[in-house]
Length: 118
Image (cartoon, rainbow, N blue to C red; front, side, top):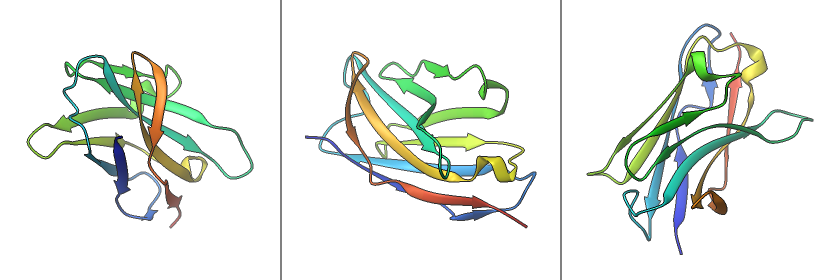
C-alpha cells in the first residue's frame, strides 16, 4: 500500500507562489499507469482536482487552474511537487496529494492546510 505525505508552508502571502511537496513511500512514482495528483478543498466547499503527473512524467491540469499551476517530480527522492502562482485568499484550502491507478483513485495523504493571507 502506498503512503503519501504532504509538506510545505501553511501560510502564503497574496501574489506569491504556493509550493507543496508530496513524499511517497511504499511504491515508486514511476510505476506504470500510476498518476500522482493534487486535490484541494476550500473551507465550506467541495473537492477540486488541481492536476496530476503521470508515471512517464506527463502532466495534466484543471483548465480553470492551468495558467497558474505547475506539477513536477523528483524521481530520486520519490516526490512530486505542486506550484500554484499568484495566489489569492480564494486559494486557501486543505491540499491533498493522492495516487490513482489507471485513473482509479487510490490512497490519499492526510492533507495540509494552506492559508493565503497578508
